[in-house]
Length: 196
Image (cartoon, rainbow, N blue to C red):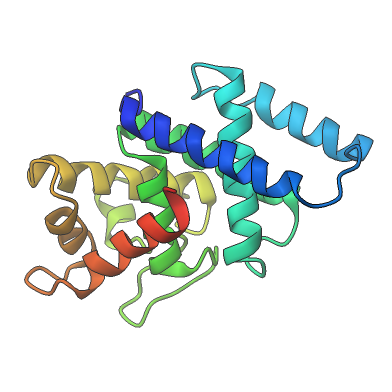
């Protein structure tokens, strides 16, 4: 599913503003290793319709991750691999990649091996019973592709069930129906960190 045109415009505008603010600082040519890394990331980002959009989104979100969650993924290569996979899984499920980023930010602060007080695991804090319900032998919720695929699929299910209401879907995702604190926290992260 393609992102809505307004979301695309917001992402492009944000990237343009980010580029303008970055250009105020002293500039120099990127290091050859960084140039190669970005080129590989863009070329292997199969969930984008346009390589230029891939470059803008990956660069923008990798920079935001470095600013907001530097300890979880300190190096650019790790952030780019994660973002490519996240974008692919969110797109496959039909969920906004930015909403998934905001959900992960609140759920685990991008800690791959996060374990909640109730036993939810990984980036998207998936309950282990899902492995028994729909997983395959050997599945591991700390395995990034498995965690993101299950999390995006669950989030999309609740978005569909709640007819697109982010507040209601996020409450179901978190198991906090009737308590708006969690959904509003995710939506705050979405607007403040991941959607500008």
